[in-house]
Amino acid sequence: MKRVVIVGGAGRMGQAMAEGLSRYEDISIVGLVDRSEPRDLFGATYAQSLSELGDVSVDVVVDFSVPESVETSVAWCSTHHVGLVIGTTGLSDQQRALVAKAGEVTGVIIASNFSLGAVLSERFAAMAAPYFDRVEIIELHHDKKVDAPSGTSLTTAHGISEARRASGKQPLVDPTQRHTFEGARGADVYDGIKIHSVRLPGLVAHQEVLFGGPGEGLTIRHDSFDRTSFVQGVALAVRKVDATPFYANGIDSLL
Ligand code: NAD
Image (tube, rainbow, N blue to C red; front, side, top):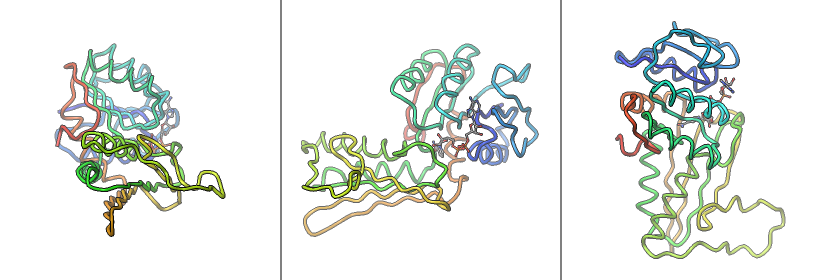
């Protein structure tokens, strides 16, 4: 039985994780940590911080909060030798380095997307990348998302750029000559790959990778219709991590 504490336990993902993970027989939600009180406790202990949890025994911390709070989770899990699964996105390079370093003292898995379909679509996009001249990404999320572009779109773009480089493709050059309005062509990320971010109420997490070549196009689309789509991947990660030093970026290697 893995005893899990969720940081960001009052948030949209935290509540969905508590509900989803508690359905597994080998996972028990023992704590919810959040600055605000969770709507539903799912039988767990509530605390405002990990250090205020008291004598609750913890095997794994699952973090779906904000980047600053991830730093606290990393420090706490490293000191207490507790496994850490991070779903929070928008981390700086420095914060990412801290997370990777924690993998030298305890088990750590960070993933920008825990849905299996999204991970597969990243793989498919990397497979297609060497065969097309142009590629752009459109990511669509609910209007409460605080960071842009999404972590998933950045991971996807990175995978595409690596695959393009490996096959000898040059960085993309935007053919647009005149921008009537700044920003119309999205954000240039790795090797000129563009990401366009859409934020609308009613959406959860969606992404289209559009490839273009002579006389043809290929679109790889993934939709997370609700937050249960992330539960299976988080459960995989929770089962994998413990106090044994380990680090993985993405759940690809766990599939
Ligand atoms: P949310 O705003 O609903 O929840 C975040 C929660 O964190 C809030 O309840 C907030 O009170 C809490 N929080 C903020 N600072 C805190 C602190 N210092 N200590 C403890 N709790 C604190 O956001 P959400 O929609 O649940 O998303 C949370 C994160 O998960 C975002 O970064 C989002 O991009 C990410 N996300 C990741 C995946 C994935 O598969 N990796 C999927 C969906 C969302």
